[in-house]
Amino acid sequence: MFDKLLAPHYLWWLWDGFLVTLAISFLTIVFATLLGFVLAIARQSRCKPLQMLVISYNAIFRYSPLLPQLFFWYFGIGNLLPLEFKLWLFDEPQIQLGFMVLKMPSFEFIIGLAALTFYSSAFIAEEFRAGILGVKVGQTQASLALGLTWWQTMRYVVLPQGFRIAFPPLIGQYMNVIKNSSLTMAIGVLELSYVSRQVETESLKTFQDFAVATFLYIVAIVIVGTLGNLYQTKRLQIRN
Image (cartoon, rainbow, N blue to C red; front, side, top):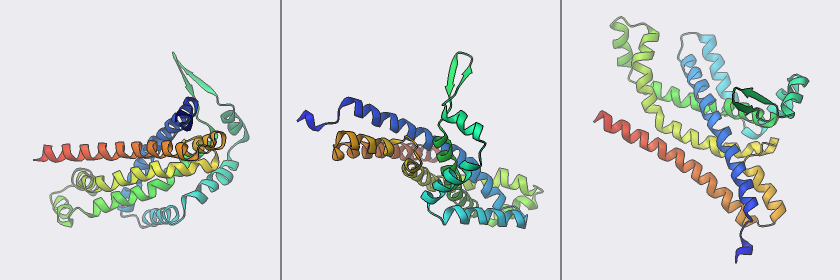
């Protein structure tokens, strides 16, 4: 019976890949949220060229598949980087920060993070924009009539309400980030899907291997959904 289970060292391989998945997903969520927020604000500005630039950005990244974008970043943009910088990353340098040693991520990890961030930010920007548009126009007009500037109206009236409206869809986008991170295996990021293929090739236990990997993905997504629901519930309790 026990010979059908994965050996402990294979489970550790999968755990290490899971940690990489969590790292690239968390960083993508942070950077994509910040960039998406800036894009949503720029889309609402009164500068027409800026609006068109944001619309073009969102169209490019939302209407094209993620996998070709990963290849574009890895083989296209990656080749434009200075050779010395790439060689420095390939050597996996370490930076001494007092008593701590910070290990730089791999070149593939950085490229995968950049591709996921730009791709996800376009979707997150649309969620923010939908939240902003969900605020009644009368509130904006009333704020302007009271003497607030456009920026003050956005900051104190529109954005707080828009974020509350956009929050549930944002949780869905964050779940998609975790699932989309599996595609970075195509450019060599040592995340969970990549490690799963290595374990399957060496152990020949396909079902057990991918069952564990699937379970870990589900755990990560459930955690994100649960945290989002807890925040939403707590916010509703405070309002009541």
